[in-house]
Image 1: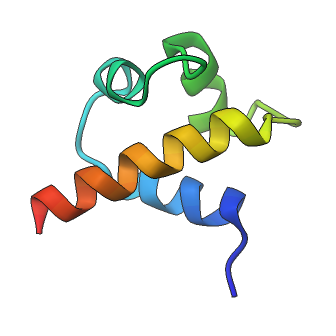
Image 2 (image 1 turned 90 degrees about the horizontal axis):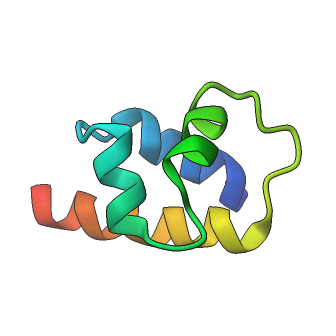
Length: 66
């Protein structure tokens, strides 16, 4: 079983949208600045609220693309 953090990083790597658009689509509390750090693996302790919000958005995006 893959944990939420790993699955979210994987979904983000597969997503073709620009980070700014992903942040806008995911909504608060996911900001563009936070997402740049998360995508670059510079965010050593991301909050579960932000990761969950990002994960949910990326799953919706993946469903639309399929």
